[in-house]
Structure formats: C-alpha cells, structure tokens
Image 1 (cartoon, helix red, strand yellow):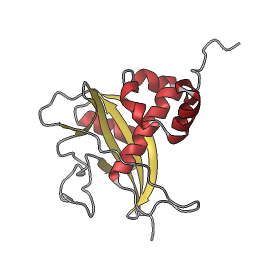
Image 2 (spheres, helix red, strand yellow):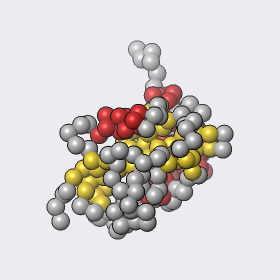
Image 3 (cartoon, helix red, strand yellow):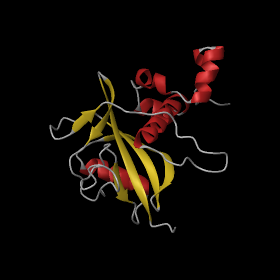
Image 4 (cartoon, helix red, strand yellow):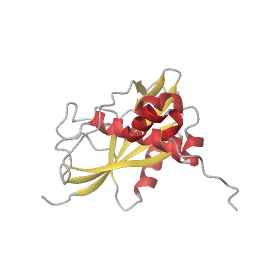
Length: 191
C-alpha cells in the first residue's frame, strides 16, 4: 500500500452554557466526503469532521483558512494527532471557535470514546471518530494545564474538560490530590 496523500481533518468545537459542542457546518467547499461511511456522498463527514487535502499549504494555515471560509473566527487551532487511514496520513486538528450565530450551523453534543489502544509495536487496528474526539479532548485538557497560550485561548473551558484529563494525570490526582497532575505555570520573571 502506498501513501496517497496527506489529509487535514478538522474538529470544530465551541463552548456553550451546556458545555463543549461539536459544530457541524453546512456543505464545505474543498472538503472531501467520507469514504466507506454512512452519508459518504456529502461533506462534512457524518461525525462533523472536515477533511481536506493539505496541498502545498502548511496544514495549520489550511485549517485557519477553512475555518474562516465557514464564517467562523478561530480562537485556538492545534494539531492533536495523526494516523494512517485508507492509504493517507490524516493530521487531526482541533479548531476552537466562538459559538456560531448562523442558523445553518448545527451544534451537537460530544460523543467522545475511550482511547484506541494498539500493541507495543503496532497501532490500533481501528480508530473510530469518537476515539479521535476523545483523544482531542484529553489533549486540550492537558494543554489548558501545561500551555499558558492555550490556557488563555481556552479560558472558561477548564470545567468542561475535567472529565477528559489524560490517564496519567487522573491517576496522580486520585493518589495525591487535584494539584498533582498539574505543572506550575512558567514564570516570566526567571532570573
């Protein structure tokens, strides 16, 4: 099997009073339909993810451009994972935006699933969209605690991410208390 292309997959998320919601945008120019899944004839993907070829553009710039083309303002864009899927490398990005006001954009509750686990020297046999979303949420929970830029961009998200803390941090917190899994913020006044 040869590598066909690099695809950029975008998970669009926003925070509402009800918590984090996935955004299902209307048809998206340049987004490819899902292969082998229900609703494969339409984009975005049935799970709300968008996939676009990376082309010659940096994937990060491609994501920002796609989000803006949808009429949304990106607050935070970050690559969360990659995987090999049907002959392509898929780079997954999360794009956090303000809640959309357009009536053509649907907000959906999350359907995050536990992490996909492979073997010590091989990837999981299958990775479902809910597992990609679950990994993304754990990644955001880690970033909010570890990265001051992410913490500022995702201000107000911490309560929604509590249940998505990465496993090692949860184990530490269970044993040592809530502050155990957090790294102190970097100090600007290093002498």
